[in-house]
Length: 151
Image 1: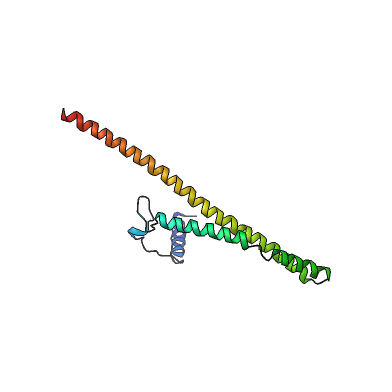
Image 2: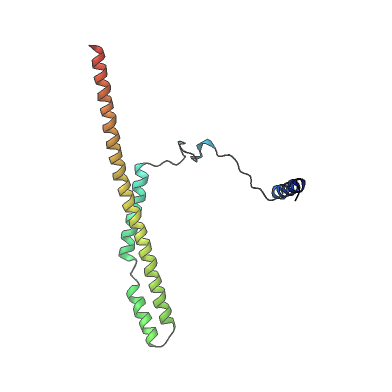
C-alpha cells in the first residue's frame, strides 16, 4: 500500500465518522453544583431532616402495626379454597407471600432512612463540636499572640 493510498483511507474514515450522529450539550451553569468546590442548589436544614426521619419512623410504626392485618384471614381463605380443590387457594397464598416480602422490604427501607438520619445528625453534631473546638483553640492562639505584641 502506497503512502497516498493510506492517507486517502484515513481521510475517508474521518469523513465517515464526522457524518455520524453527534450529540451536543449546553455548558453547565455555575450554580448547578457539578464540579468540585462549587456550591450546589440543594439546601436542607435540621427541620427538613427531622420531618423526613419522623415520617419514616411513623410509617415504619404504622406498617408494623397494620401491615399484617389481613394475614390471618388470607391464610384461612387460601387453606379453605385449597382444601376444596380450588386453584384460587394457591394463588391467594402466593399473593400473601409476595405481600409479606414487599412489606418487609418497605419496613427495612423505613428503618434504614430513620436510622441513617439519626446517625447523620449525631455525626454532624460531632463535626460541629470538633470544628468549634479547633476554631476556639485558634482564637486562643491568636489571643496569645495579641498579648505578646502588647508587652
